[in-house]
Amino acid sequence: MLPTQSQIRTDWTRDEVSQIYHSPLNDLLFQSQVRHRETFEPNKVQVSTLLSIKTGGCSEDCKYCSQSVRHATVVAPEALLDVRTVRERARAAKAAGATRFCMGAAWRKPKDKDLDRVLPLLAQVKALGMESCLTLGMLTATQADRLAAAGLDYYNHNLDTSPDYYPEVVSTHTYQDRLETLEHVRAAGIKVCCGGIVGLGESAADRIALLHRLATLPEHPQSVPINELVPIEGTPLAATPRVDPLEIVRTIATARILMPRSRIRLAAGRSQMSDELQALCFFAGVNSIFFGEKLLTAPNPGADRDRRLFDRLGLEPEPAPEPEPLPTVQ
Image 1: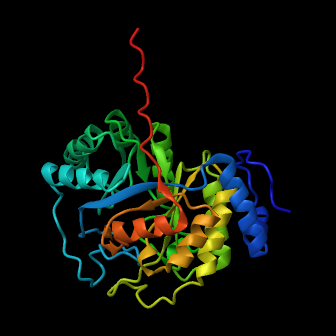
Image 2 (image 1 turned 90 degrees about the vertical axis):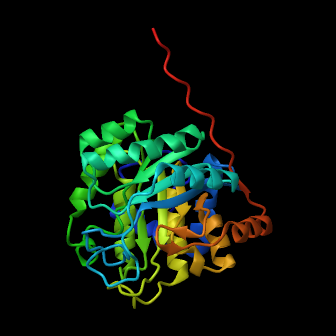
Image 3 (image 1 turned 60 degrees about the vertical axis):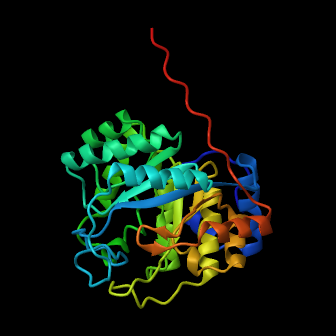
């Protein structure tokens, strides 16, 4: 039997997650929609934009990624973008309806001097009144503290897949490395954005294990991006057969039930999804997407297409959150 209350649990068992995931689809979707409506407005969607501020040249060997120097892709390394370019792109994103601006840099882990160059970019986003998010690779505790002091709202660091399947996807760092970065981010008081990728060649058991790991973190990620693999020519996973679309729906619905207060984002892969599949994902519990033509180096539906889809479904972009009050000076 599926849970019927939206109490927050971080003690889910693997068997419980499996039972939810494998429920009859009608039951699963009904329960995920109930949970969704208990916490969120059902027809509001938070909109983010993702910009690659430093592209390519990454030393990691993630088999899905076009930015690795180990893969023969068409992505050419590009230097860190300048302040003016980032400011213009953030302004355009805000004008298009985005309330959060996310910036990604293809580093294994940034050096302190790299953060020195990123912080002015972060300041441009904050000055526009947008929520901010960064994904820069692995962080030390000191680096996380620096980003928190600069006002960073979210840090993205995905677990990608299950602990057991992870070595089949990445060998240049470990699952524990990822978990340690998440701990540094949480300890610094930055909100966590952490999810995974469906369609890496993993099994349903691996998807269940990923969801179990996310839902049993000390605190649920405030944002949970669910990506579908976008096959990139030249990467080891370029020829991976596409996963059954209903497996994506099951993953989203299960995530919504396990983590009822998290924003579930339908992230990479939407460009290869039909409107009908996206509609089913919204019903399953998605309440966040990326606007924009590109997600780092992967294609994404344009804002105009998304507006048309929103109109067809009766969805509305969520307004920007009220800024948090500044602490009172004694």
